[in-house]
Length: 288
Length: 260
Image (cartoon, rainbow over all chains, first blue to last red):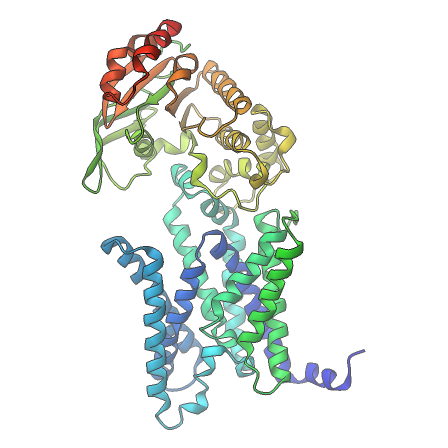
């Protein structure tokens, strides 16, 4: 039997909105994180999330107020720009890809923080809660946001379901795929775009600083248990949804508690448990 | 041994004046390879000779080269999907959540098209290919838990499901135990007896004459190519290896004798 305060919390429409948003975001980030981890793109994810911050602020400026679609679009643009610039730096100037990513991670984030402090000096901006994009605030989720978040989740997960075998082939052995005449570049680009989407969609909940952990940790947990890519996707989505839900509810219940750190601690606890006890269980979900 | 192909048949694999650079270094220099149909062929040469690079050119996996490549009589890019390709085992991460059967089934994904899932029929074909390489008992084993030789056999099975006329293999025996090597050779011989052309990048000169009947000696340039008995001469080896083969004098004549 849930206690009276908990029951009230669960029936509160704001809390229901927050919980639904968190579930969707967590599941999306978790599922797409599977490919990020298997393709060794964790650092790329971290770079894109940090470099998303200037985009959030620019989106806010362009829309002249808190508009989630504008801010997420901005985040997507600057996040992807950082990924692209890192790739250029690596290809054209021979900088190690890792170092190039690290450079743009820092540069993007620094630019974002500078923009953020400039904008916040203007009257009225503080109430928009821009600084919540640093560490995430689940309570900022509006009912109207749910539609956008739901649409992004459906679209990206639908794409993964549709092209599942192609993504599996390209992730496991891109060389073999290319030799077979598969347009590997197209699928790799799609996967990188999906990673960017997974990150951007969760920014409001978890924040730019910690978002990549919500992408990576569930996949790390799932890898310990899964015996097939399909099973890993589902398990990772489940861990992501669970972590996001628990974190969001905890931060809704405890005033002043940031959502991002709570979510990430739950997700990494799941990963730690899986690493300790789940060594290669080989779980498969046939027909899934 | 290969049956003689009709004189008019185009080569199974052919390059015409292929050159390729990595930065300033020349990896391939004017290589014109002609592997006849039905050959059990090996591309041989020292480390860094460009053997794997030549395979990459044939499969369109390089970032640009001079010259032309043909497979089965067609421009390589138009025919590469008809080739059974076995990449080097080390090019993938074996810590991927998949069983041996999953990996073999991936050999059918291209034929299935981008949207269709592999069904029961595809799984049955994959199972048959696993049995052909003697791995039927391991179909449910996670690929990370297989030995190097078993992984290589899974890779060969993944190429077998394509039922190709031409198989290109990149160092198929590297880091493979003796039992697996014997199993792999047996499968390749069977394929060849059924009419398929086999081309393997190979660097073990001690097994060359017993496994293959056609060779190409490569060291950036193509030094010789043709039926093994006529091509594997001490002079040709010496030229291709350029003195980097101290055992050459004692090894090669005996190998040649065994082949003839």
